Length: 423
Image (cartoon, rainbow, N blue to C red; front, side, top):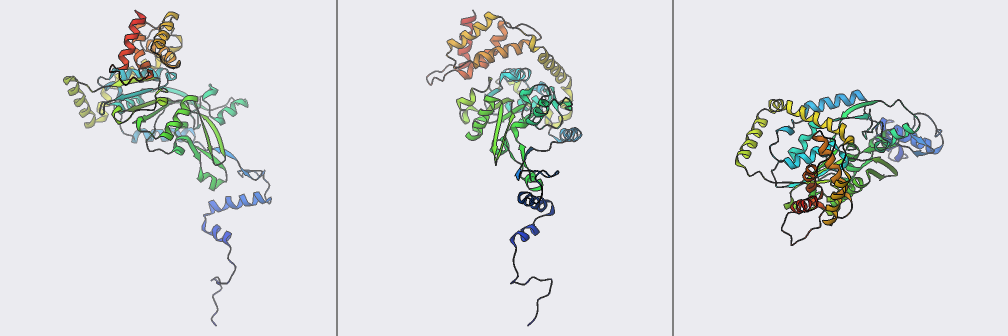
């Protein structure tokens, strides 16, 4: 009988599933798993340093955020490689939409803007061109939630804990307000955040991987074709927009983090209506129509052709106007707190809302905020009747009850009631 070589296992030898599984795993993965088994069996003390275990259970921590140098290098590389953005100052017409966007940048507490209109009217282009005008804000270095070093309401959990412990050495830098695109096909895990599987396998810890809502904190969340968004994502947005916080319950992880963002949506009403609950969350509503003037249409076509031919030269030609608009926005943001609105004007605003049967008080609050932001944008410290007349249709148009037999545009109804009360 021929004997098997010593290097070859006998078919009758004892088979160990654990050993076979360990042999198939890379060393970086098998080692933490074996440590986990040793820790849970008591052979390694649970308090041993360097291990992610405590009393035989996984600990919960956030994803390791990049350092300031890494973040700056990544941002610089991304800026060089990204697609050139059409300048905001170069957009022809669509003044109502542009004004609503600027007012929300000046005062983010207005609550965002919903842009509805015909296809091909520059809705997405205008929103994305806003990136160049966004001001700088102070943020804690390496924090995935863009935490404000001075405001506990918009601090991530780790930063808030350090502040409560008396830590005054938080590294702070300035960064541009971020704009996050929410794709229609995004999963709920990607939007809310989920458990970091890689960190769980390699280090043996339950780590939270922040999602798009964390990235959009203190920034802008843009949803193109928002009326086509899946219902489960609409529910997530409703919850976060209402409370300003995102709570995640995943695989034994329970974490809450701030999610205060300017919600901007765009869509074509012919493709479907928006749920009333979500529509009410938008502070302002801009109606966009197709430009009918032949001269303006020709100018738009020519400008677009120039941009497609040489984006860099086109952007440089509007650099001075862009910088002027940036300075105007920064000045308006800093002076916003000094703007006053008379008591009788507040009473008349509320009277308009009451006589239009607007549900709730969001209409009153948003109209007051938008009027003050417009006055600040114009360099004044007092709100006038003209300021209110400019913004009130955008603040109340989408809050009126729908009458299927009504043929008049809701914005015209608001203007009629405004002149009736303010006359």
